[in-house]
Length: 440
Image 1: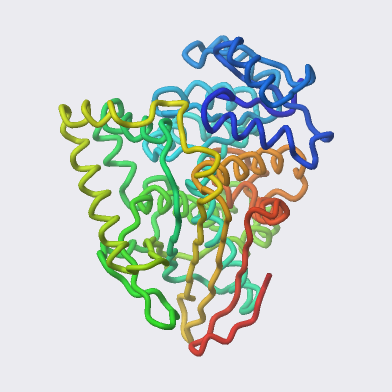
Image 2: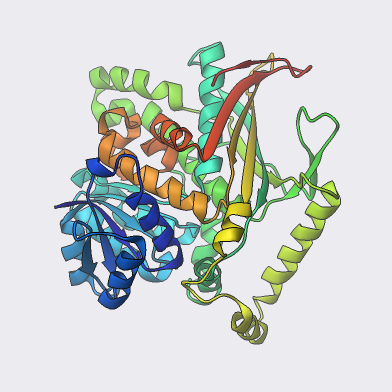
């Protein structure tokens, strides 16, 4: 049995994942195989990366469940980089849920995750499968910076403290690939509109409802910024918010449904384990985009308007047909030089629900293209965490099910990403005059 199976290894992001795993410092501690539809392309990839015969090729067509099941049964952890997930992801998750496997993907499609929750969450809790969608730029920075702010506030004020408004501010340079654009187009063309609409509603992926999210703001002030900074709408906010809200909901549900799930005696023990991770019923979340370079808020607004116009035009079928002619095809993406020029900085500000108000600021930074180079690192380290760090996984991982990066991995993924040297985390209590006490 192989430790890790990479599905879609010959795709653009799959190649980056394969390269990352092949050069990993812990390479001797795990085996991995490449799931490919074309053996010729698989052999070409192995040759280009200098991979020996210890890296197997597994021929698998994701439109055939029998081939998917055979491949999944022979692996411990599955990395699925084949999108659009609405079209090609369901049967892969089904096989992992049925056979109790651990699974990670790069999904940015809330409607797909809602379907996976409806169909396979209960089954996965029974087989012990751990299904973790969205293990890349969608949505580790969002999920993990809130996780860190919660930890910092509870370390400072006690585990009983509850969170109020949490806001994340993104500054990034990123270029699209053909696969990302294909996923966007599939949301318009293949997914039923009613499923898409339902999946972007507040708490659509959460088992419990929380406080309403802040309403739409074209411009908002960045807390504690000196000189004053302003931010605008971030196009990834609806999906990232859904992931963060699922983290909130899973922990809240486990905290308060303990007596029903585990019985009174065991519930008290479980409550002690889960309470440090619970955000509280007054938690709400929002995201914004900050332009750090010349132009500031004006540049950010221009980018937002351009993105809105592009998305609006793609809703018109004839224009969408023309646009697709000029976009990168699936399997294509930025050059190596462009990947190295990218960056990200995600800063989360979270305030306590009760007075006196106390703020935490958590920051995640990365020094490469976050959508591809850093994403390959993120999903690979998630897979390795599930494989090698079982004893340190977050409490919710013990239950199995469809989880999130924070509820499955928690501190494991923070430590792993920090150790790569490609990403850095800080979390601190922030006062009005910007004095702070560093947590990490």
